[in-house]
Length: 233
Image (cartoon, rainbow, N blue to C red; front, side):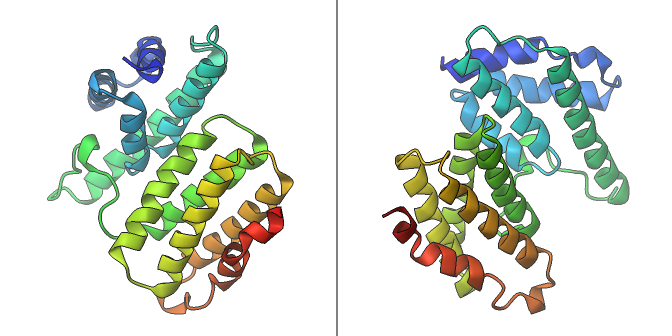
């Protein structure tokens, strides 16, 4: 049993599930709790939950609390602020899920364990991951390493699928950059913060532009990443 499994078991056992509406919300929480509790490596299962549409905030909250508890073993229990964060993010996820089901009654939403991002890149979700990493590094909040590892997996998936040369090039270069700052432990370096901020801004602009107008938008990010090591020499 890993530390993450033990911490999550404690956190979820203290989660105020009774404050969720009776029915689907409580049933779904029980399903998620069981999957995390039974997973050989709960940290990997949390990464899967993060990819489920609507549940990224809830998963991220748990990641942050796990990271905090690992650094401060005496802070495993859920406090009032933690309850508010987790309840709010879980209710938001449930609301989005129920809304999706009501809009497409002929096609029920897939189980949580199967609703992960598919083979096609979800550009908005991808941009959101980049933004969350940038914000986590800038604020020094917990969960940065998990965010980075999750984003590495997504970038590697992009490069293996191929497609648009700018997107594949960005994914490849950004992977190299993330591996470099992780190996060198440069998360507190102002140069890393600046690069991530600029890259995140460019990727957000690219994701928010209609597909037929995205050509060339990633160039600024590509230029930043192409020779990023020169900034650290």
